[in-house]
Figure 1 (cartoon, rainbow, N blue to C red):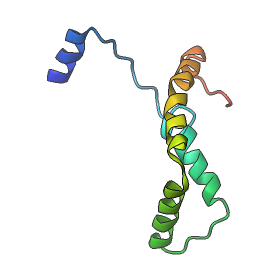
Figure 2 (figure 1 turned 90 degrees about the horizontal axis):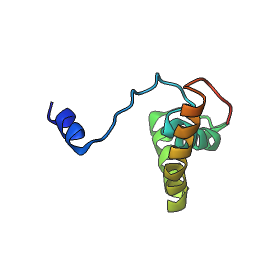
Figure 3 (figure 1 turned 180 degrees about the vertical axis):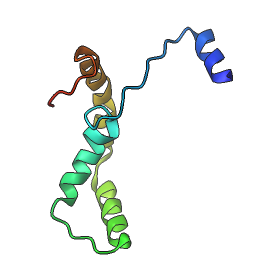
Length: 90
């Protein structure tokens, strides 16, 4: 209840969260898409192998990689609004 009251006091507007879709979640359209490409063709037979590969991926990305994903999010959300939440390519 305090969060809702604070949001109202600040004059912020809230928007409904769209149903899950991989083209809308920032982690899916940026981070996980790149992780999937990194792991493409990998054969991971143990949980530890998967954990190690994810750590290797994260450690191999420069800080700009994460910054770029964050900066792309608002444009992505604008496009989602433009398409009224419908699926779109790109």
